[in-house]
Image (cartoon, one colour):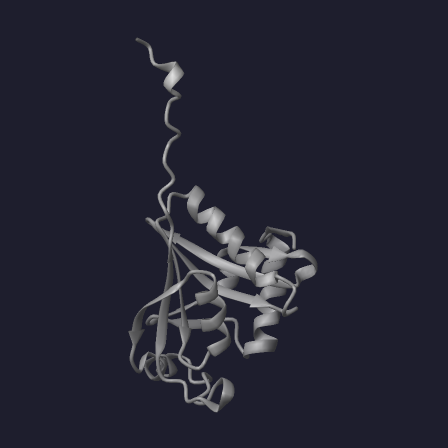
Length: 169
């Protein structure tokens, strides 16, 4: 699956798509409202999916990932592009927040090496104060209460070692 950088014309498309799919283009997470269409990102071939992210110091936060064609490797390709970008920026981790009901996402990320590193109890109830349209019941009829933080630690990229034959002695 080919991916390309998120471009200016993709921003309007994503804003519209978020309004259609989620009822709003704003997302709530870890105590803030943010707008993924304003972030950097990648788009899968044919707009089969999108991922947005923010770089902050040595961390890269995935702020949105959507695959509109399940089972074709869209999400995996998008994650790969973000990981490559994070490595190039010198990040030591890629992280994201999802909710306790999102079992498909938990399975998807953990199969790709992400670990649950935090649970923010009742964070979604606090987010509803800022964004009341967040539903109370989510996937599989699970009440949505908590945010789960997942991260992928990136191994440091080391400079190549000089060849032994290059020893100046």
